Amino acid sequence: MAQSRIPQTSQTGPHRRLEETVLRHLRHAWQSPVHDYSRRAFGELNRSLDSAWPVVLDSGCGTGVSTVALAQKYPECLVVGIDKSAARLGKSPELPANARLVRADLADLWRLMSEAGCKPAHHYLLYPNPWPKPAHLKRRWHGHPAFPSLLALGGRLELRSNFELYVDEFARALALAGVVDVKVVSFRVDDPISPFERKYLLSGHRLFQLTATLE
Ligand SMILES: C[S@@+](CC[C@H](N)C(=O)[O-])C[C@H]1O[C@@H](n2cnc3c(N)ncnc32)[C@H](O)[C@@H]1O
Image (cartoon, rainbow, N blue to C red; front, side):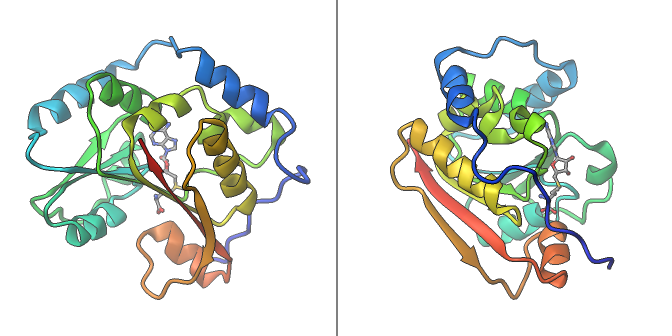
């Protein structure tokens, strides 16, 4: 597998507009229309959710390799992998009975799920696209207008990335939202959970993990 590069950014620290952007999104509900394909996907998913079965979200699951690993880790839960890329989802491994893959835009699905009162027990955000250019702050999940919906879902959140600045900004955004038990560590892994984790590990990158409990 080709060596991959650690995201390069011209930022020398957290984005200078991070605080104002996060606070604006926390204060004003996001009104943009939901994509039809996300609404259909949510409708199907909602019909298959059983309140007796705790939910684990694998947001941005790519090919669903991590969704399968999480379904094995949480046999008592329904693990839902979500990605907008039909091409990636089309390469998924065989799914165990407690796993589903959903094609949807995360910004839409988080909003629809939180409006429907869905409360996942765990929420994994594994190697989100880094968007390292300063102009792309609003594409990073903590700078995105969908950030309040992610918070509203609650549960035990775990973010992994090879881009330390992303994790640092995410932690600051959580603090602005009043989340208190945010932990960030650099970690080593022997058995990568996802294709991007494997790729970064083979390229010798430092990996970062953020965990937090969302109310
Ligand atoms: C860098 S890849 C990581 C994939 C996987 N989690 C892994 O660790 O191998 C980021 C994934 O997020 C998905 N993604 C990015 N923006 C998305 C969005 N708005 N809605 C749904 N999926 C999105 C991409 O399609 C891609 O599969």
